[in-house]
Image 1 (cartoon, helix red, strand yellow):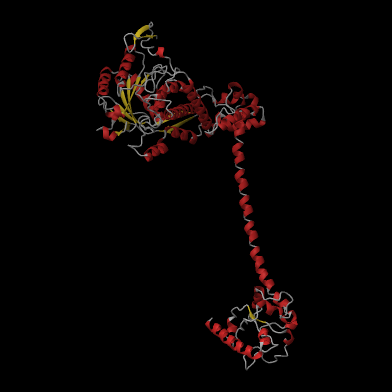
Image 2: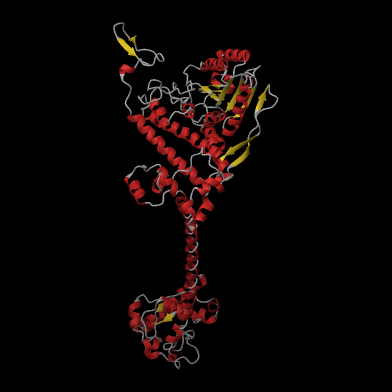
Length: 638
């Protein structure tokens, strides 16, 4: 480049000297445009070094020089001004892209038969073209444009790959249709479900399809006008599944649809969705129990029927939803006072209830909502008792810790006080000789109470049919069991009483262990002690956030690995004992039941003041009760 710049500077000096000698006419005849580097082969030639790139004349503008250029002499009929396209054409033709404005009258090949360079001045002779310039007599416009076509040719291939870029886009769209296609088969089985259940729908008035679908969303009310409108226009309606306690055989369940089987399409429906397709019974491995003073413990396998599994799932899910609703009402300040929630420990209440008879007895501490429900109390009465309403199970005067039902002696607010009471109930069972047992529950926080060991002693002496159960949820209020107890083997605390340690997060393990314990007591062998290893998701009570003495990660780990509801659901699905649609429909029904119960619990009236002293005595004549002052009298009726 520096050689070229030096050559240009020398040429400029020589051109200015020649211009002064020849005059303005000569100056106007030599104007250089669009200087660009020449090919390396040309730069090294002697002619190029001698000629050099002609300089621009500052006295003549580019447009003025273009007007003096004859189109015929220049060899093109287009624009008079040199353009970048002109440079490309010349460069494609193998020429030095340097153009000279030459008078048209002097352009001829005869003017320069030997050399276009003047040997004295070193400039191009007037009328001569540089050797690299095409011959103007041969219509150079076409050769100059001919290279432009090859330049267009590469441009077309550049466009051509763009079409293949578009072409793969269509295959990208094409797989989208198969993605939609599997969605239709997912919808298709749902129509057979509607067809299969039509006869049952006409008899029990179950949910419509629209109500079921709308119920899947937490944000839409099941009683919305849109749901009602859809319900009236829907012809095919899937009702609730058959009752879980049905005694009908599989054959009877299929033959109950005589009108349906006459339709050829319905036969395929029945064959795909009939209850005979589900596994009626399955066996599961359960965790082996640790035993104390026993030669053998409960079996390591548990059998579960389809009806039992659906019943267990519904009960535990109802307790879970009920406790979550109680949490919501408490935070809204609709429920006041003490409130201890049971979510996370549902397998304990369900497993115990599944192993004993309705005539057997249960007494527990203040975390009593789950046991109140399993003992037969409806959800709306439990929530109404929590809100202190007249329709509560204790007429709104018991609250969270004092709920009662037949053969259920309620929650008790004093820590450990229910254990001696349970021993007394077991004494009554033995005295009456009715072959009944009493399940007496307490928590790990009460396990160190002295009255519990006194009850152990009396029950062992008199061989009472009492099952002492310690629900070890790892924390007594906010204190872990390792910090509160020198020995955390609570199933060994009875010493001379046999004991079991059970997985309290598995409803089947709890059921089998409780059956084993009840048989032990009914056989006249005396009391037995069980420790249920469980976990509560909420804090000790609603006043306890539950994360100051344990981490959120610990709670989440238990929920993800050992949740009792999820464990039962996975077992049934993996053994084809139920369909996912059944669980979804059941969840929708439970949510609706809880919402209706909450509405009742918030709209039912509170008990009147004159009912304050009622039910002090059982089945007694009305009597007067002194009020806060001697002259205030209240009446009590049973």
